[in-house]
Image (cartoon, rainbow, N blue to C red; front, top):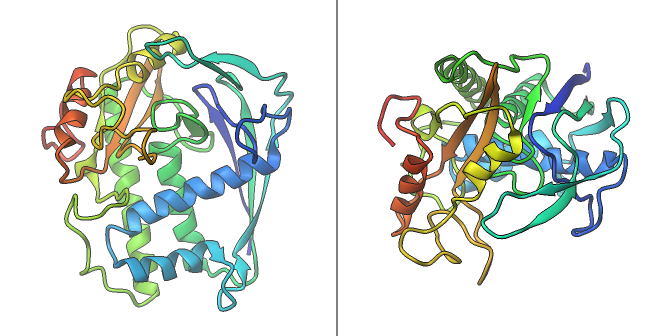
Length: 309
């Protein structure tokens, strides 16, 4: 089966720290970024397919695409190569844009990597298409690396559309992408003989799930093209409205058992600035209104489905 090859460009700073947490990113972190990307693609596969099937079925389907250590699946279904395009240079000091002074090291926006996915003989065409759908969701809704859910590490896939003239144009494009990937994944499930009648209601899962256009929203265009200033706008305002800033289940927290944020915010490039895109896996918890008020504060008004935030 032919390899899948594409180039990704990061339009916001990439905070990648290799396999060992806390280590300075090496000049060519091929293996670390490859593992990080594989994990991101798994995440978006689980988010989309997990909204359609039961947990047990999801585990089996995920293994059929990505492989597992179990004997029946025979390990990974594909190999990866990730090569930087040009010289990455030394890692830069990146301001995180928090309300308190905080920096880390990473690669400035504009760095590019060529990614090659080499399917093994056991991978079927249906599984390859499902992987492509997961990569597409990541490339348009996701990010990679530290602070990925708050705007850092936002990629574009250079074989697709990389810039938009307005938020409305971005909305139209994302609707098409999400509908296409949903169709690809439904065809994958059909090929596997899986019924999607067991889909979940929004908020019924403890995991991050994506159920369609009613969870994705495009925010207003940024004022200016200074990426550090734009990131500060979206990254420095994460505060629970109920006063529990360090343990809000609606926005995530990093204390008392880390809880990943159910709000995934990344940036897209406009011709004259940036535009935030959010995917909200809303839960029925008592702090869901904190996330809603945070999004309203950032200027989000409605989902791609037309429903209000």
